[in-house]
Length: 176
Ligand SMILES: NC(=O)c1ccc[n+]([C@@H]2O[C@H](COP(=O)([O-])OP(=O)(O)OC[C@H]3O[C@@H](n4cnc5c(N)ncnc54)[C@H](OP(=O)(O)O)[C@@H]3O)[C@@H](O)[C@H]2O)c1
Image (cartoon, rainbow, N blue to C red; front, side, top):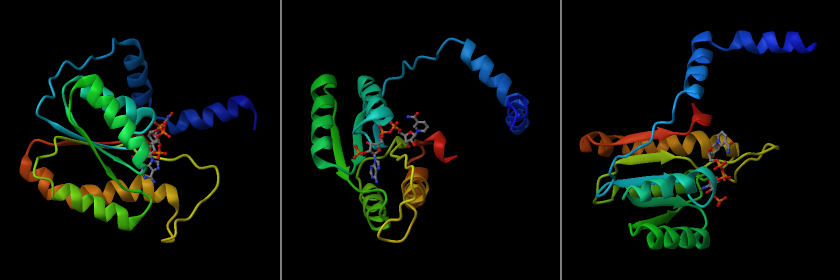
């Protein structure tokens, strides 16, 4: 396909309002959060690297208590130790492989049983696969980690989050 035809194909798919919002955002100064998160609990999935790791550190730097949901115990120990030492906040973790429906339900149940309210819930854990992979439960892996995990956890927690009246939850853009 010629280059200009390719461009017009994609251009048609974008809404002009989105493009102008993107241009406006790129030229405006970044909004810096100054909010104090002391006494608030932030739950984040996939904190052992990348965006989840830096997001956890950011909330910790604002005084939040963290509860990380990761699949690897050693990495979780290391990251929580680092955050506790550096920011002096509470940092705990739960272990769950979010590609497994059984583990998603188990960890959602554990979150439901928490005594403390959840103030922020961030579904960050994700994978990038170049080949289709199917879990032992017969589910395509990206679907399980990116969509089913977020959906099931939100569904199980929805009444707790609503009744607290103080929660906000974020879903990574890649799953909207
Ligand atoms: N980076 C980008 O440019 C970009 C762009 C668009 C969207 N995103 C999305 O942003 C999120 C974070 O991306 P990233 O670049 O920071 O990725 P990353 O560095 O690879 O980190 C992914 C995190 O998710 C965890 N994870 C993966 N599979 C898991 C599973 N089955 N159960 C539990 N945890 C699991 C990983 O744990 P392990 O350490 O155990 O592997 C890691 O902590 C992902 O959802 C990704 O799709 C990223």
